[in-house]
Amino acid sequence: MTRTLVLGGARSGKSAYAERLAAGSGKEVVYLATAAAGDAEMAARIAQHQAQRPAHWRTIEQPLALAAALAEWRAPQRLVLVDCLTLWLSNLMFSDGRQYPDVGAIELPALLHQERAALLAELAIDRGDVVLVSNEVGMGIVPWGAVSRSYADEAGRLNQAVAAACDRVAFVAAGLPLMLKGA
Image (cartoon, rainbow, N blue to C red; front, side, top):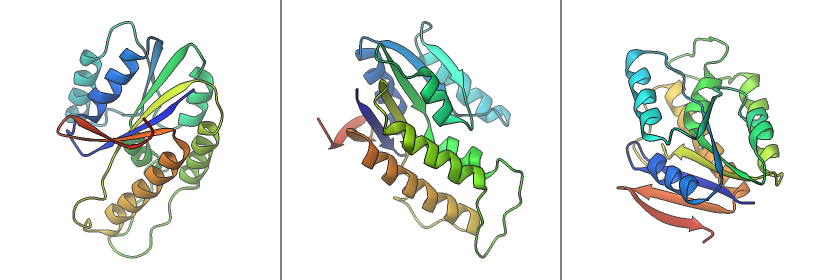
């Protein structure tokens, strides 16, 4: 059973690469979607992603309880594709409706820490193949504002922890994968 992390920037081709990996696996594919359509632009992005996927793939929408969904759907005969971890992180950061300050320390919701730990514990179990997609947000300038900096920090920590738990890690730029770990 393999665990693969696919990293890349916005519009880098990471989702398309992850979908090619899933399609080429020869296994049943379950697509765990973490996005929530909070506005018309996001709804359009979700619709575009849905249109690109094969119709026979099962799609499960799960914006928060990712580890539980992975535990439910991972199996030797299938590959679970998670798209994406950074949207999931954002969902968790704002899950309790709190308002964050513009400056100063950010206290993140307990649910974020619980779900992150649950995800890492689930990835340690060999249940079936999984491909996880995540944005690499730490390669640009340092964001303005405390919540944006906290998000970039948490995304970086999450990507490092998931990469350590995975057998393979690919970085995608301009649609081209560069293998960082594994074959």
